[in-house]
Length: 292
Ligand SMILES: Cc1cc2nc3c(=O)[nH]c(=O)nc-3n(C[C@H](O)[C@H](O)[C@H](O)COP(=O)(O)O)c2cc1C
Image (cartoon, rainbow, N blue to C red; front, side, top):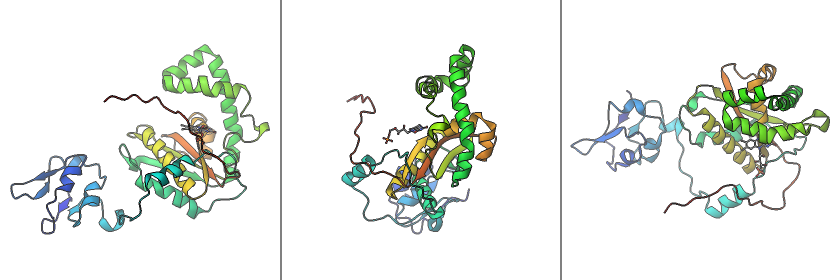
């Protein structure tokens, strides 16, 4: 392996040894750090060893100090600022009729550079659809798909198949959440676009169906995208309907150019918010059990 420790400049602080999640560092009898040859292959290339090294002595083969790292900023947010920031984010479903520049979308996406990942982030795929006409062309197909959901849940055989093929979580989401909404005719296009909410752009996160931890990674990426959009004065909403339609309806997949072997996990609509919220919503979103 091309991993390398420059022992001439290493300060022997052992920070890399302590923080490595894969424990690929050893300490020899001269108190020098080395890569344990038989463990190097389990390195997840997270870069933490290089990020913590004061003398830039550690080098992971595929990472470069110049390209993959930047200096630590001075003023990292404190709790109050962080709390103000996350508590003022809202799912935005009403947008100004204003396009988003590619630069702004790239800025939003750049937050993903800093996201945690379960495994194999290189297998994650993001498709940016910054074209309202293309989004609109998918809506009749998605609306039909949502109509079909009512028929499927009403059919005991189809319900059984969904449960069996997609699992109980997806089935319950469909039956208890989507079914009543679709049955009420909510997504019919005569009411307007209640699927992508007239958003000028949608970001779809997808990956090969077998890619390690891709579902979890995608949801974290979507969260970063949403928060990043908020920091730039844009609004965003996580949309589960679009990926569900992509996975089920070939024509929707084709419109969004999602490769056949990929599973769409989640999507995020973005745009400039039309309205400004006047207060924060504080919800009880979880049951917390303490074990002390
Ligand atoms: C996994 C997931 C899927 C979602 N799918 C949709 C969706 O398809 N359509 C929609 O309008 N909102 C969707 N949302 C947004 C939630 O409904 C939203 O977070 C909720 O209304 C709370 O509002 P807030 O984000 O302003 O706190 C989804 C959120 C998550 C986490």
